[in-house]
Length: 319
Image (cartoon, rainbow, N blue to C red; front, side, top):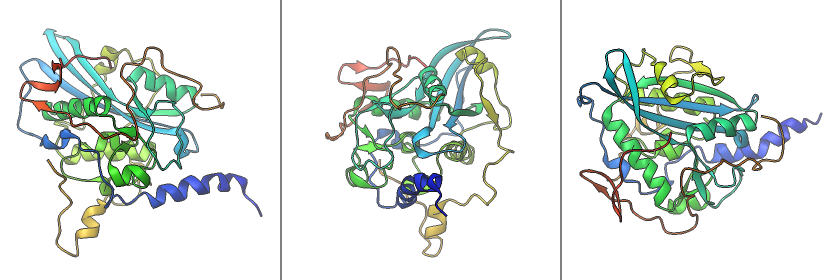
């Protein structure tokens, strides 16, 4: 008996399974890996830093219609009982065409969407949106997140859906939406973020990783007032929690399992409606699309913050 639906799944599934091991994949040379998590650093008095981990996917999910993105926010209490938004930034890495080609073996120009553009993109593609958080996060994570965001937007790195194979894996000139976030992990490489987890499971894995690293001071406290500050409180979102796990098996980091027998530690890297995809485009994109198939340019990090050839980039931006 033929099962056409299963055949549609076969190609992308095999590609993702083959790309699931990132042991040999070259990551883009992001300076964000130089930021080690500081679990003791306290934010300035009255200021708070938050992280929101998003997932979007169709049901049933397919690689071409799933997405992982993360938002961070910086707030300050202006007076008792009142909190104001100072900054908000999102890493939501997609092809500039907004048409995800799951079997592409070469990077293409990428674009980083705002959280509002990302939610609109997901709903246009009839994707269910889930959210872990908002959680309060360490200031050191917020800092490294901004470095990673600037690296994506200015270095020339492109987008490739299966970035553990093909050109992106050989040269480090491309990444997908998941690794656009997790490549900043200073401890674990891509082997710890296998692409067999995409959509909800990938975002859940990112949330659990932040908790494991101690980057969420109180992971049981969800700070929903941040959604009001971001203007997202009325968006239809499925709110996820750490106790409603999507995985039924023990969470064992792949590198820990692979290297257990040899005594090697995990690698520490160096310093909406169906329709033709890609027809929706964000109004006034908030960033310059990346360029594929060109040498990735290094991004310097200064003591005062993020820097580019023009000088210090202020820590202000659109969500």
